[in-house]
Image 1: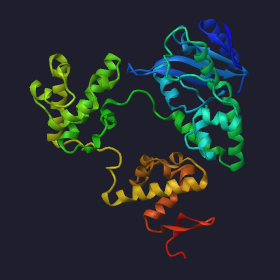
Image 2: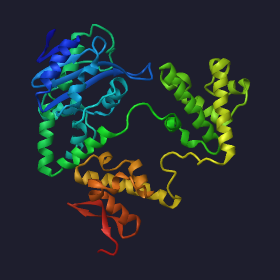
Image 3: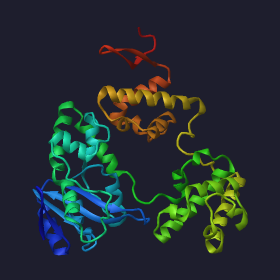
Length: 396
């Protein structure tokens, strides 16, 4: 089936033979562009609603409710390079729903971060680089409902229609600045980053305000969040639908031993406190208390607490320096180093990203010199303005 909406032509793929023919066509090209529409508000595993692909001038909208989108596997594992914009969620969805991701990838959002943009939207890149606005549409509409409206299809097709051209413009700029290798390395980092469901033992780290808990409460929060994550997996619902974050914090602080005490915790109601679910929740709380009292396990700590207290002020100082250096270099600060990256480097983690590759060349080694006292931060004139600069200790 073919359609035409404004200036974007597309093919609607809803049967396996059409998908196979398209994949065979796509394998004859060096690159292809991909985007997805999905929902994850009511389920634990994301629901893939649409896959958009552009290759060789053809745009297809693949309906995963009618055809197995796993038929894209030959394309994903083939020699072509996949172009995404803001690929992290797309990769997560492909991993959890199809079990496949492209073997080569370029992310235009990441690449744009090396030429002065800060996590730009696709709409902003289309407007600034190719002077084409996205068609009117509502990304928050129901993409699982069929049939999709013409506006929805037009909006979805436009997401990949100009992605290749945007990638070309950014790549040319990157090459001129000598940063193409940096960008490709960052794209590969994202492609190979672990995705999919969180490890249940680490689920507590995603609980809002969990850092405020201390002592026994932290152990209980870890076990309760672990139970919540496993139950959410079993029921295929979001963890917050099993138990809210505020309830996790409430039971962690009080560590109730019975259903009545459990009901007295904020965010807990009858469905949580009674029956098999109440028993399982009380069991998780008891496991947390037992872990806290055993003294045999390493005390659970979130990001930033594992470094020496004397170095913790350095995290803020280094973050300020990284932000200023990124501004001066026209690089997205989050690419140079996140708080997690800075903590890993200061803690001496051998796998710290800022200790190797292009990040070490730009900023990692300077941070080491700063912490060791060989360099210092100061405000000095730069191009007529005062700016935060790194100087050798003792330098005039």
